[in-house]
Length: 228
Image (cartoon, rainbow, N blue to C red; front, side):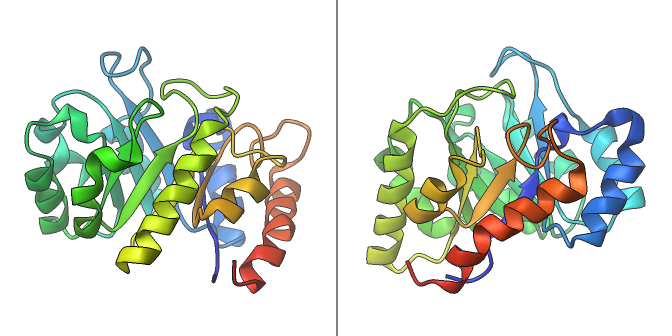
């Protein structure tokens, strides 16, 4: 199934030592930096913004994986797509015309993705799957780190994976929410190819950052060599 990509959730990073965090991620060839953008409206929390993205790009060459959990998303696409090669996802219910939003992201030479909320059926946006580069499946209610997985979301990942195979859709399946030591195997077996790793794995306080990354990579070795 190939290499499973890692996208550490930067809302869980040590902001007082962000340079050290980036140095470690660069050393271990981390695939993406996951940026949760929240506006206090679509979800009841405020998090990272455009200036944070700019700071990361000034220091690091790691591509950004920007998850827009915001209302009026079309007003902000241009700002968050200024980093060529970034992955940018949005929730389709935040715009009247999601196809146009996808096209706008791609015009800025970024990868376009849609995010599926826990309460949204996989089939609700199936017409969009052939248009996007990836689909982000939420396995916790968006808004806060540290939540427990909603088990039915594993079935959603598996269904999405089966639908992609049947329709020969090559979009990546990204998973966000309680990507823990215990849940990673089930997520990958269901079909996840990109893992947003937060406080329950890469940023697990029981381990140093390097040790945690090595543990995740060891956990994934079996699946990367197997054809599931």
